[in-house]
Length: 412
Image 1: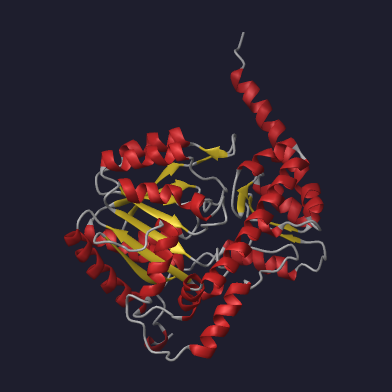
Image 2: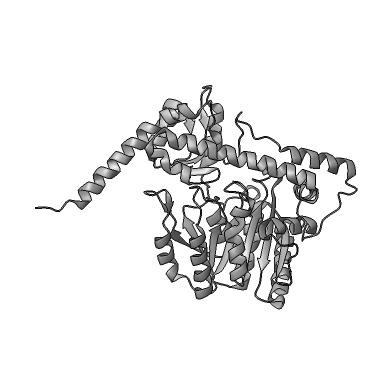
């Protein structure tokens, strides 16, 4: 080896992305009855991810009327940010303590917010629930925040281990950041109750913790207003707040990467400081954000007819997800908890070896942790899915019950 071909010799090998490998396996499977519940995108009853009608109409309007493809500036499309802010907060204007910044998807918003907090609070820690999405930890640790975790999911109840979460957060320090899923965004399909949101608001205020809300599925849980309730409570009651928003899911614009970061500060002076730093970070990361997706969303939200059409179609998507949940829950009591959850995802109590078994015997593709995309199920494949997973779920439940009884036995 000569000196001229060692430029990358210091790189460490990387583990392949497990979900991408799963996608490749599924595509290569020739079985016509295979079921893909791994990829996290909305799918209609026919199995495809359609372009929403309002999106098509807005794109046509842009093609006909857009006068320039010039740069937007580091802040992005201000009209888009203002209109999305209305969806989130219900308010027309930011006010003197808030600003919005267009980003490439919710992921871009998370990264800018993470770097902003790392600059503002050197040594700050961020608390992530377990489980969360695989990209969360590397986003925040890569930005320089120390990652801490707290319990989140209670596999026994299919809900949130809230008492354990609050107990773990008693170790949170002033200036720490707490990542919160705004609604049905967690891979388990669970979401906080209003009482729990109030408790989280109180905790942030008492301990000086900065909430960072990841709101990526507004409208796909219980409705646009219902899904924003917890976020609005936090904005109304906690002085310093970060909010990452994604339009990729509720506008079904996954490949266009449409997002925004919103920052709320305790004073106008602090906001100006945060804004200047956030813009500097965005300029360093991607210079100027892409225009097309944000322009489409802005066009829809600015036009009453397109907005109404989008909301109607989003309602239909949400209702389909809930219908699938109810049918799946009705198949057997071991699946009943699925109906209590919301959004695209649920997490089944199924072991990794059982996941591999149903992949082999029934062509059912899901990650090893049992997380499933509800939208991957439909009238044509739901029975096949239940047939494949149910024996393993029942066996797992029975084994768990047996172990529980043994642990409670008192020796003679």
